[in-house]
Image 1: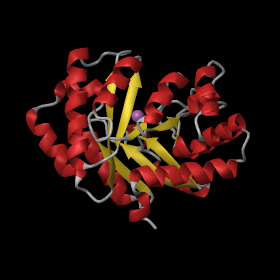
Image 2 (image 1 turned 45 degrees about the vertical axis):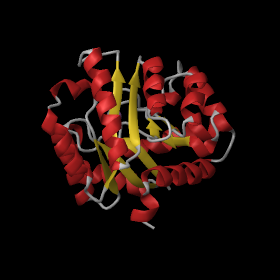
Image 3 (image 1 turned 180 degrees about the vertical axis):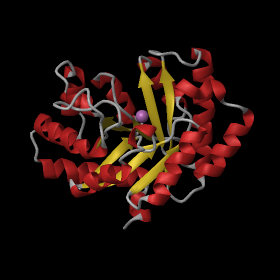
Image 4 (image 1 turned 90 degrees about the vertical axis):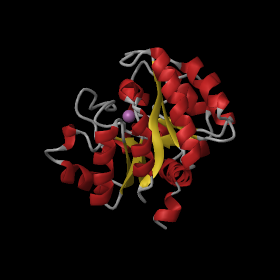
Length: 258
Ligand code: NI
């Protein structure tokens, strides 16, 4: 059984057939889905999903794209939402210097404020990093020892991975690992110990080959796990067993679902 450590099943792309998507995942060997909030209305939807489906857990946080809308009271709302019993992490938070939908200085300030809040809440963080590797590592180092979690959809090289691993972070591998031009990510997967890896879909985005271009869904985390098994030269069952244990550890799922 696998855990999809990063999905967005609350998004409108799944409104028409969400029940079926969840059922397919369950039948295909996915035991848990962590659906990740990106702004306040979306965090509420993510929690509603976790309330509706037993196998779904939620996270809350403001994505770097949307941090420009943060007001002082936003953090009080997030604090209240994070108290929900099925909220297992704080995120996704971080820096996106590719799209720059929020100004960079605002992204950095709000990333810091949210790291601080995650620390206060005692939640693991889910980190979004696009074209901001150096700045991300610098920020994680500031909270080294007081916050840890997951670098989601890892896009750096092994040098960066090593620095994150040394701070206790897990590296989460998305479906892009199956893409022809993802040799750097495959190198990271090869060199990172299996007991520090997670697998994710980031659905409805980043669909693995051979379905690239179509909508992604939690079932396809199995495709990514197979790719990881091939790269590391271990069995699919071993990847499933160890990444599931890792996800349970970081999200504290063992407590919620023994
Ligand atoms: Ni995401």
